[in-house]
Length: 415
Image (cartoon, rainbow, N blue to C red):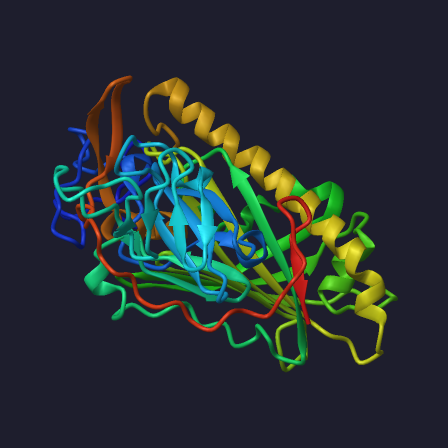
């Protein structure tokens, strides 16, 4: 293993994959501080649950400090536009929906789904030329989520949505998660990939012994396979149900495969002697603020249905409670890491696990540097990504996803 620097990272090239220079280097290591690297906007990111965007209603959301207004027209399509009126900068998320247009609540300027102005009620021929509008974002619905493409709109048609074959399969039922976590998105990638932190969950899952069987690293991905064996201790019954161990909760050796495929993460757990995963997890961590120190975690947990009808339905609330407890402990840890970074003014951790060193390289190389932006309130870092395109027509929304019941706290389900 190559010698690591103060934040545990291996030396990188002087530029990201997009050719942009890496900022905030440690002079002794030549490696950028990963926590100052933003996500690459040239991907599809979920910004809301489909059920949160109701017909003829507007929802305020954000991506990396850029406010976005989502609204669903009378025809059922979802649109995404910059959340400000081009007139007085009043948030369009405060407006009303009329047909397929969004009208500002202040002076009633109306906008099409591509962000262009369609009407200014009091404008006469002698008045000055109005602005073209605001930025419109390509938007699609899939898997019960609303995805936007916040980067270069010309690339939206070339970048595919993630493929989730287990979603919608009659063999699986899906539980949806939507949570805000106060940390840089990279801490979330590290937390899921590094299964050596099972001591954190000892009160829920008992004593588990993870063994890293193998891992592979590429330019855009890192994949790890772990073997889990029980080492004693009391285990939550819902953990046994989730791992398809049955009502008796028999001990088993499970193989877990976790993959960061930039910018998403997946996890598959296959019990011993099983043909299919007992459950599959897909997750995305979407930065909300310009500094990217807060992210919104969206997760789809697809759980295999047991042979006995109705068992999963009865166990569903208990599995939900179990997963919420595990997530709460993980969130406690990653938010503590973020606080330490802020208090110390940088990353001082000493990572020794090669797997995590490699995923840090992937996140650095595929991300974009955060650059300072002068604002009225001071200097705020933002992503050094594509410049906004005013009035660009977004890609047409895909077919509406199947309805699912979900909330911020309890999430939703499908199947």
